[in-house]
Length: 224
Image 1 (tube, rainbow, N blue to C red):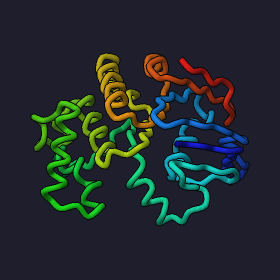
Image 2 (tube, helix red, strand yellow):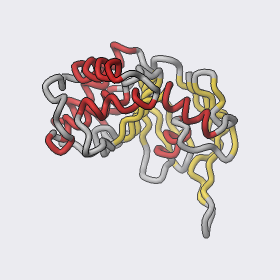
Image 3 (cartoon, one colour):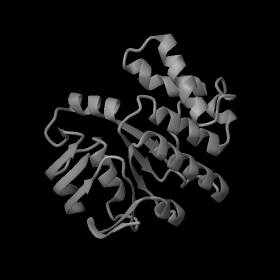
Image 4 (tube, rainbow, N blue to C red):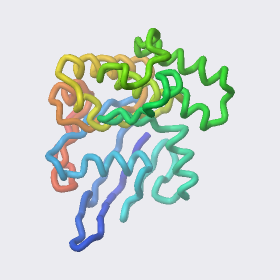
């Protein structure tokens, strides 16, 4: 499903910074994997490269048969739209749109009809147990409810890959545990390939596999 071969990423500036250093990784279909490590270890850079938000300085990245390091920006946009769902720490919901509209937005961008978009958005909000919040705006929701909306939006096209960057990092412990249970439940139902960047030990323990980064390299790879 996801394969990185000798991937490096450098950022230029007054001093060149190596975020990833000759990293190789294979993640099979349906696996839920945590990525941990200290700040600056390369976790978010790794997620951004797998998600097609950036390209490596060297090495190859293949996602579901597509070489991300070779395709055009337009093709990367299509891969992100059709094959990847993103879950962020700070939700990134549009404040003027309702829950239903936020979840339906990626479907509108694919050219779906209004009726079909609304039907799928309702189905997903029901899946994350927010069927009574369809017309609420983000600032009318709790942090946990906002993250549920973000998860529903990430699932809008039932992508084969979900990338979560600190999905519980902006939540209290009880709400974070609830979101973790929801992600695990969705993983079991949908068999999506999930990568979770986290500092939360409970999140890391819940995954089938744990990868630890340090200075842009994998220093530990454990199946749990």
